[in-house]
Length: 89
Image 1: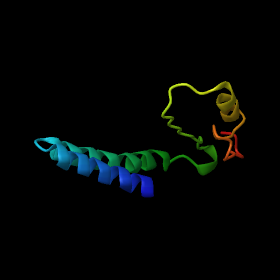
Image 2 (image 1 turned 180 degrees about the vertical axis):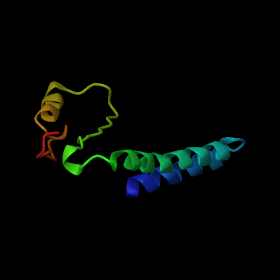
Image 3 (image 1 turned 30 degrees about the vertical axis):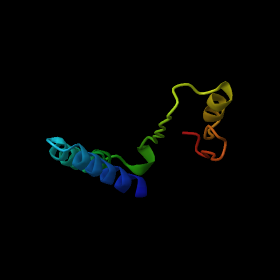
């Protein structure tokens, strides 16, 4: 996944740029970042696929959605209307 690798690279670059203890902290964060998916997968593995809940994680850079954007999300679409979530989960 391109985003994940870019995030890992960014953390390393910022740590190197800041210097002092930052590179050590950055590497600890990267290790933790890599461990999270493995931890979650190990916990979910025991749940039969049909019984697993679906999760949609959205991160918005604005703090307030317009009424139109909020309605699109409630209708299962992305805020800009470009994507549709057929499972409506």
